[in-house]
Amino acid sequence: MPGTAMHSRQTAETEFLDKNNWEHEDTMKLISQIALGAALALGAGTATIMVAQPAAAQEAEEWKVDLSRDGRNAIAAANEAFEAQDYPTAEAALRGVIADPGNADDVFVANQVLLNIAIQTNNDPLLDEALLGMLNSGSGGLTPERELQFRSRLANTAVTNEDYPTALMHFNRIVELQPGEPATYYNVGVIHSRMNNEAAAYAAYDKALDAAAASGQPAEQDWYFNHFTKGLELGEEMREPLKRFYAAYPDGQTIRNLVLLYRDERNLDDTYLLNGWRLIEFADGMADGNDYLNYADIADRGRSIGEASAVLNRAIAAGILSADDPQVLSVKEAVGEPDPLEVLVELEPEVEAESDGTLAASLANDYTAIGEYAKAVTYYDRAMEQGGVDMRDLNIRKGIALTRLENYDAAIAAFEEADDPDDITLADFWIAYVEAIA
Image (cartoon, rainbow, N blue to C red; front, side, top):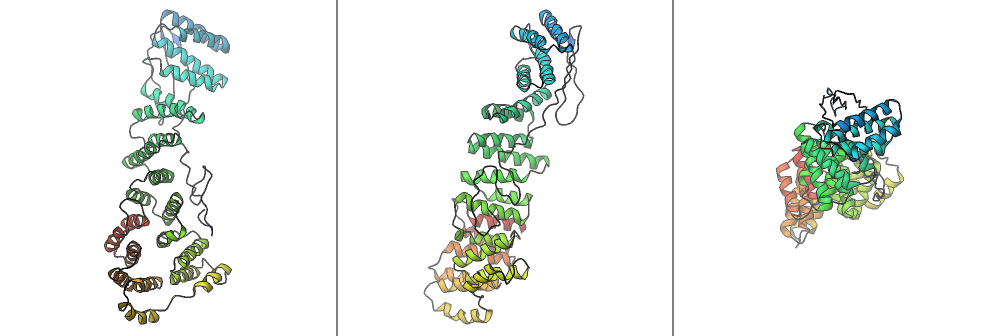
């Protein structure tokens, strides 16, 4: 992965870009599980149900219970058995009420006591059964706050059991109970992803980021990462997601990881990634000396020989690589040093005698390698006028030179000429980055 001289695609589902420890999209943002230490008090046909509230601690609500005569008697007997820690007897009495209830409140309260039994006996399946029973009781005791707690627990259990349709059902209801809660949308996205509902996952991640922005809550990097990954898979328009990601996490490492993710998702040859490495270095995203060696190697293979040597010189000057490093010496021996300015100036008259733009483009690349960006722009333009060259490649290189000159509007215009309107390209990465820093 990133940071090694030879890149290989990650295959383990639980790992993505280890440099930033971004989490895999299967990582749930679980809503706090409920504190289920409920207490039941019976008397005069009323019961006080104590259930901890979600998020901020809230006062427990009092709920007037209207139990049927038979239900009250059976639940009272169950409660006595419960107090005596005779849980099998208590459970049997409660199941009798649930099987033949007098009304909805009978079902709710019987399941409430069943819940307490589950807590005392550490019986998770019984606990979830009791929660589901209260959810389906139709009783007025099921407040929105309690429903949120119960569904949060049941959704988490369903995820653990890989019962994704059930988890999705609960999370969709939680969305209705907590409209605008970013983590809930994110969880919906995770579930859709596990169910291979890629478009729905992308839409849910999009809503999670929108909700986080609206609420002022910072979204975590893996939210942006999963949104970006799904967009790549679906062929979505990715310029705005790129800009939003970089605006939230404006560092070179973000650019680096996204460029390399793009390479891996599209199975691109490294030579195509040369403009990506140019962006990574420009954004201060180079991780270590291996990144510079990779960049130089790709520049050499892409026939940008002067650039290959210049990249290594910059790394040596910054103390990132040693001039005596065997790998550095090997590359520099192969590519030599960039031609000095005076040599390039002597080549300028020859450009006009050429029938196509090949020499002008080469000269522009050499000027870029030694930092003469204004001259580079001149000769990129001349190469495109003469023709016979890759117009998209020259426009992106021209855009890079203009970015170096801080002529951002002209740079964006050049990148637009290099872009493919039907697909994401490295021009989109440059446009997103330049628009973010302009």
